[in-house]
Length: 344
Image 1: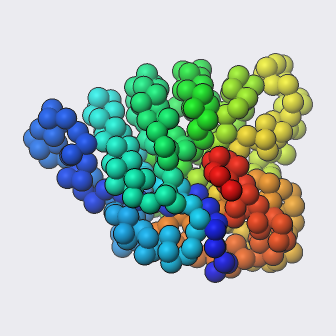
Image 2 (image 1 turned 120 degrees about the vertical axis):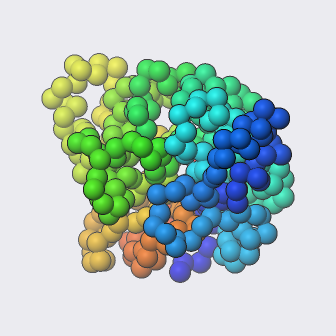
């Protein structure tokens, strides 16, 4: 494993051990609601990972032992996907997100200066999401707004423009993380029939649609300071997608007259992708070719995706060998520090 001293780990999963951990951060109504509805909360979000897969850290002491001290990282950006819930109750989702954010602030950010956090917001109520950004977005330690890639609508749509503006106004990152509502089909042609298909389609296929939506809907012209992180979505699919994006834009640019430059330029300026998982070829020369086509030293930010194991340590080492010492330093420290506005 590559040396990580002082690195920024951009995707470290944490989760409340159960709903009981969140009850202190809810009012009486929602505590009673939980008790009478019998709701439970899986720290891995049931169905996202195979049974027996490692679960996220549930307290800061465990995270210190497993990540912060063990690997010597300088900063870790926490992601809690427990809010990627199957509930269709918009009011409960809002209460759940508020509780998770307050739990992150009290139980994690207040207890270790190396930690930064992704705030969660409700996906069923845009006004409530903006309200939560206004409530939490300026609190110390929060650097990102976490949204799922798997939704019932593309994040570039007009209904979300005020959400983008609220994120940018507080100098936060829009973090698009793999997975989302488990009741939604992950492909354009409907549901998959095996977990294998679901896993493959979840990040790369859905993430491509979200990136295209953000660009084609003119989000980056409307909100030029918006920064986007693709978390646990891979990155090897980006070069061929960007080639096609540019080619078709040249042919049908009248459909999107608000785009003032090639789509790939918007992506390279506004979007960063995490190194985990790394779907890379086994041949080192091919890895080097992909890294060059992607501009990996500029586009990527390091992430362990703790505690999930993708078995791609060798691929990451090959990637670092391909981009050289300067590129390695940029991916481990420089790029994420710039993305999340971290002090040197």
